[in-house]
Every structure is written in C-alpha cells, then in structure tokens.
Amino acid sequence: MKEKLKKNLFINGEWIPAEHYTPLDSPYNGECIAEVPSATVEEVERALQSAYEARKTMGSMPSHQRAAILENLVRLLDQRSEEAAQIIAMEAAKPLMTARGEVARTIQTYKFAAEEAKRIHGETIPVDAAPGGEGRIAYTVREPLGVIGAITPFNFPMNLVAHKVGPAIASGNTVILKPAEQTPLSAYFLAELLQEAGLPPGALNIVTGNGSLIGEKLVTDERVQKISFTGSPAVGKHIRSKAGLKRVTLELGSNAAVIVDKEVDLDKIISRCVSGAFAFQGQVCISLQRIYVHQEIYTAFVEKFVSAAQKLVIGDPLDSATDVSALISFRYVQRSLDWIEEAKQQGATIVMGGKAEGNILYPTVLLNVEPSLKVSCQEVFAPIVLINKFSSIDEAIELVNDSRYGLQAGIYTQNIQTALNATQQLHVGGVIVNDIPTFRLDHMPYGGVKESGIGREGVKYAIEEMTEQKLIVFNRT
Image (cartoon, rainbow, N blue to C red; front, side, top):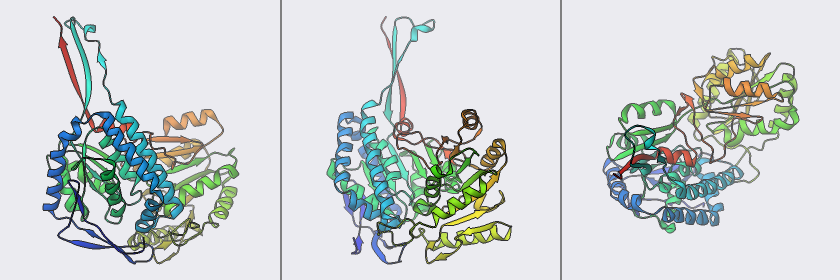
C-alpha cells in the first residue's frame, strides 16, 4: 500500500485512461499516495451514456441474479477486508481500527442489499371497495427508476457508497458514482470487486475530479432519474434547485446532541460519549457535538469525560493503536481553531485541547458555550465537543431543538415518561434513547429534518426511493 498508485476512470466495465490526472496526498503526512483521474465533461458524458444504455439490462435482470452479484461482492470484500481498511486509513486518515469497523459495516450493508433484492414487491388493491370496481383485479409493482447519480463524501468512503450503490443494484438501477475528491481509491476498489462479482458493464461507472463540474452534469442531465447526495447543506440546496423533476435524497449536516438526565450512571455512558465525540476525529454526520448535562451531575460528568478523553491515542492512522489522527485537510484544522478562538473570546472555557499539530487537531472540550457560537450552531466536523448544563428536561429539549439541523439526537434517562416525552418533542429524524446520537445500524431508516436533508437511507428505505410504483388493473368482465 506504500507505493504510489495510478487509477483510471471506470466506465462501461472498462478502465479508461483519463485526459487529466491529479495527485492524491495523504491527509496525515502530505505524501502523494496516488494519481487519480480528473474527469472532463466529455468523460462524464461517456459514463452517462454507458449507464443509460445498461439500464435495460439491469432493469430486466431477475432479482435472484442481482442478489447473487451482491452476495459475491460480500464474499470478495470479506476476503479482502484488511486491504479495504488499509485503503480507507491511507486516503482518509481514518484510524485503522475505525476503518476496519467501517469495512465490517460495509459488508453488512451489501448483505442487506442482497436480501432486500429478493423482497421488492407491490400489493393487491381491493378495487371492489368502490362502486365501479366490480369484476376487476388490481395490483402494484415496483420498477427501477433507471440511472442513479450518487455523490458521496470522504468520511465513510466505503459504507456511504454502499448505501447508494447497494440499493441501486438490488433494485435494478444503474449508477454513476462521484466519490469525494480525497477518497476515490475506495470507490475504485469497489469497482474491481463488482467487476469480479459479475456486475454487467455499464451498471456502475465511476468518475472522479471536480465536484461542481461532475455534479452539475449529473444533476441537470435528463437521463439521470435520481440524485442521492451526502454532503453540505449549501451543496444540497443547490442540487435540489437544479434537479427539476428528478427524485432527490439529501443527507446533509448536523450538530448532534445528547441529553444526560440527573439519575444516569455516568460510569456506564462516559466511554460511549467520548467515542461519539472523537471517533474519526469527529468527522461523522452524527458525531456527538453538543452534550447537555443536568446541573446536579454536571461537574462529575465533565471530570469523568475529560479523564477518559485524555487517554485517547493520537497519531498515525495506519497504527492499530491510534484513536485520533489527522483531519481531512488543513483548511478544516484552521477553521476549527478559528471557531475555538471565537468561543474562547465569548466566554467559553477550554478544558482540553484547543491546539493543533499539522493536520491533527487535538480532541477539544469546551464548557459554557453560547448557543449562537459556531461551535454550537454549525457543524464542526472535527474533534470538538461542548458540554453545557441544564436545570430541566424541557430546557434541555429546547437547547437540542435550537438548531437549523435535525438528523439524530440522544437522551440518557431512567425515567420512561421523560424518554417518551423526548421522543415526541425532539425535532429530529431519529431519537436514540439511552445511547448517543451517533448510533446507527445499516438497515435502519436514516435521514433528517430541517437542514439535515430530505429522504431516507437504510437499504430497504433507499430501495423505495430508487423505485417507482406502477398500478395494473385487469377487467375480467
């Protein structure tokens, strides 16, 4: 994995040399690890045409055959799981142990996709429930949309790709995948495996390079029937404004929060909260960014949290002992430092971290942060967490809801009434009771409200959004 790689575009089942290549540097040490294609509009057009022509092949493929391809992919990925984890760690600076966890989840996601491929069905309609329906039989079927444009971020370069590619293949669609510019190697690795697994040419096409150039082409081209995007709210809004009548699934930002009620056993939850805040340097859409703790246990929580966080190992992502490594680029390091300084100037207390070394931002804990500050109201996407106190659950819920985002939220409480009230009052896409908001399993419905996006992922739910319902009525008279 140490030698420099050179990759080509993957179009119509072939590795196509590109007109332009750009260097791909390690976020951790800055070394060039690969040369990757920077696709032109003409090369994106080739990919579009390939996907469009292959849609009939995929649409008519029996579900057992689509499932078998995905089952083959699961087997191949399992056999090469360590190689996959090394790729993620190298290109994304994701600590190796965390990368291994992502690969394990990716395998699960494709397993779910293989299973769901066999469960796509419609329903019968009791048409004689209405006058005029006598003598008729009606039922629905679900059919693939056609071409899916998938645009994915750097933070889960295999599993978030799997959440788009897996359901698309399972439901008989074709895909044009635009991975993040920093993490294309994971996508090309997937292409190698799917080629071996028996996916027909054109069913998956991968184009890398300038996000706005490629994205604009995918979003505006009439051959693309759906865009599935994970990224920033600004880009998501632009996509929706340009997509016309295309279906759009947008998984956007968050500043996820957890409420810790007064009777909670802190020793049981501290390690989870530390992991939720600092795993993969906080570069997770549902990373724990805001912690609201009841005033009666606030001091004890802060002491235990900081003590546990100080034990995190910081260093090389390829070292299995590392817990926290480099952010994806120095631009995000500088932004984080600016936001920390703003919080400090406005009266927040830094009890841990607040400094950087190269692209590594040390895990940072802030106290008494005003809700209007960037580290609270925007998505930090860095190893920064704030811990504020509250006096009542109603106040805590208001603090959580005081956000333009609403992806997931958590609450720790031993009071069932408090838990039930919170599930009703928290304005988010998912409420996690007695766990952090970072909890996600890959068959769960996943998505947000407000500026956290529209639509739902989770394999079954993504398939519903990648297919359309057709009604069929037989007149027997």
